[in-house]
Length: 182
Image (cartoon, rainbow, N blue to C red; front, side, top):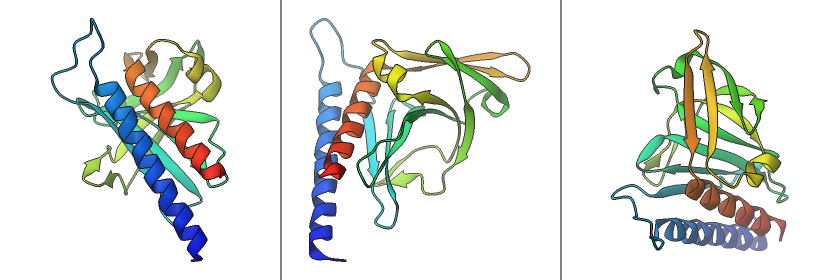
């Protein structure tokens, strides 16, 4: 691997870690009138594997690890046009989800299995169901984002991505995209 490429990769990694830590510190600070949660905090992972054509960004709250967000950024710096709100398959009723609705539209439902779900001792669920969120409406949402999952029996699961998690996650996605464009 050429030295310039190695230096660029390490600089990207350092920038992504700095952005993620800054986002975590930002979301962990109590704001006037708001009490910080007694436990938990935002977990953001930037998964930059040397042979991969993409860099993945995952985020979840440590107090609610069964729910999170995920997307990827191409090595050219172009982020994906979609984000994935994921939920652990073990979530009650989760193995039977057939439909999703959120951001005032129907959303594509997917399932995923991740055999490389741990990084530096922090693990995302290995099996998830989720909904595909278009970037524009997702970024435009000013409050928490609620996705209603519907099972084949008609039961509804309302899953909420909290604004603090979304903001930290999007800041990291944008930071990774900017670093890869250089």
